[in-house]
Length: 276
Image 1 (cartoon, rainbow, N blue to C red):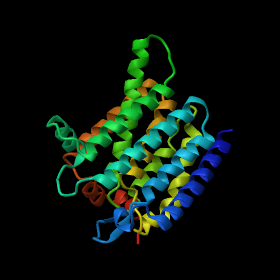
Image 2: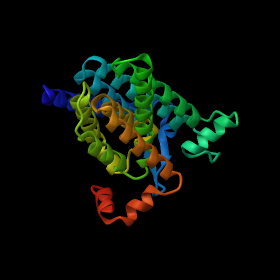
Image 3: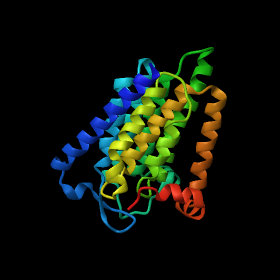
Image 4: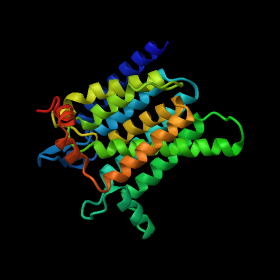
């Protein structure tokens, strides 16, 4: 059963990701310029990969998941992808509001950036997904505590994957590694399949530096991976995972992940794999 769900999720996600990317490439809603950005080499690159990956992930979770896990996975993935896309397309590049700390600081000052809207939106949809997927055990207060932990872990993982989307293939490789980590629950095999299938479909464009995940695709990948963890890990491991995600997020405000990777030989070898 688990293998069938994995294969079904992978095939569905790959087909939908490739199909949406091909269709969007022909239509380019709003014109090509709206979807074009400049990559780390100073070359033009397309954001269309992001919504294609989001659609593939959601379709894979829907086709291969079951019960509350399926609903939670689709809500978390779609929410993260949509709010990420809002930031991708609507970000004011004339300002220097960057990172989680910057957007939260703007909110405290009464300014709502597209990044701030993304933080609020992904936080809300992550909590909804957590409420859907978290079984009621014990007291209402205990359940609410679990929902808070689970929702924070989903949103935190979505943000963490986005922090890695700074070089071709980096976020896809990280998501594939996280997808094969052991986890039980109603989204384990389906989530693994969806992440691997969608990543395989996006691999060529991403590593070839024609496409990028953007906030939409990276946030969606992280949200589905986070949902897979919260539905499949016992509470102590969920708390440990949350501590790790929070620690890495705080570290990112002070330390460059790209610099750490470049200075660590085995990480650099993995990071460079498949690039032109």
